[in-house]
Length: 130
Length: 209
Image (tube, rainbow over all chains, first blue to last red):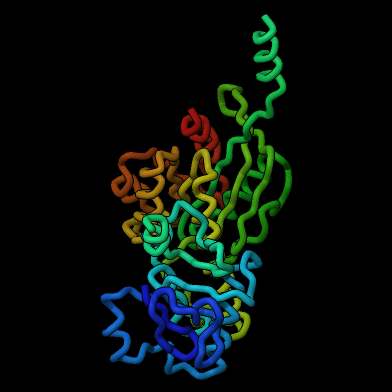
């Protein structure tokens, strides 16, 4: 699954080293996980999030970390699943309950390589298959 | 013989698993008012589960009251841990709080905490032995939130009691709630005035059978 940097919108292919080390454009460590069939669509139209001011983006990143709680290490890259929780602007949230209820496991997964994944059930399934 | 004693002692000293009753529902259904009423009735504690508010998302963290012992009309006793959860919503917008007079920064923070609260309420669901779904009986029960909560409880085979709260209000319509969730017992109450609380306590015995 491709990933997109939350801060600057740069795209990375699945397994790209930037997802582990941080975005090579802006150094961000927070990534969205993007479905392949939506990748082209997203590349063409700039998602609303990236038209936000820098302050708003910073605030959103801060809020994401607060929502995730102390379970995550802020120095490690994090991949978010935008299917479950959408943050439109600071203080505006849309929650996909059907998706959230589906997870039997915790919402945060710590992977061996020091990366965290949130809600990315499909990716995990694929990893297990490998 | 030895194994008989072993089993006997094991059973005798085994820590009894506490039943967990979870209060679930959309924001402003009256979960905390009901939790406080239960604690007041049986533990003599006022506002034990925190403050209730007219503004949505007042409860943003899971709250637990352990060892609540209630008596039914037939003198039976039931001991449980009461778990009050944040209201579950599909959309949390700070502007709603601002409209009610809250400062912007505080409202954004409330929205963030409320989102976190929804996640933890959902995370806790599998730990519940039974769930009391608290609905505002003056509102339309056919909402995405209600249907998702009840559908998931059904799929997980968790026993459910649906509470139609706020029956003291003119607009209250229990029948509509019964029609929406015919598979479950629906108990009309007013957690605020205490109306039908005796029937509610009897219904708790039924749901844990």
